[in-house]
Length: 111
Image (cartoon, rainbow, N blue to C red):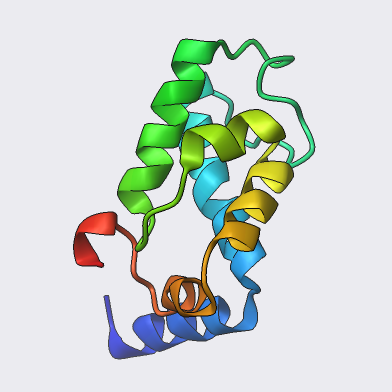
């Protein structure tokens, strides 16, 4: 990746809110688990055919990509939509944790 591409990616991340960054991360995991190319952020995971085991897989994948720890299983089952899950994570996380999302940190192992 060129320096120009890296800069534009970092600039795009800086322009997005923590919730938008979380929504994109969750949507990617959601696509992997459910096999849906472009999930809508307001679709209900279970109404799209997801089950509780896939919900656990989803929370595991999201957790592996977050640069901080959060009670993901409990937060996901409160509102099993991309938007609801992202909002719940953002509400639970500290300002420092959310700032690390914009820094391009992508896994809990980096935390």
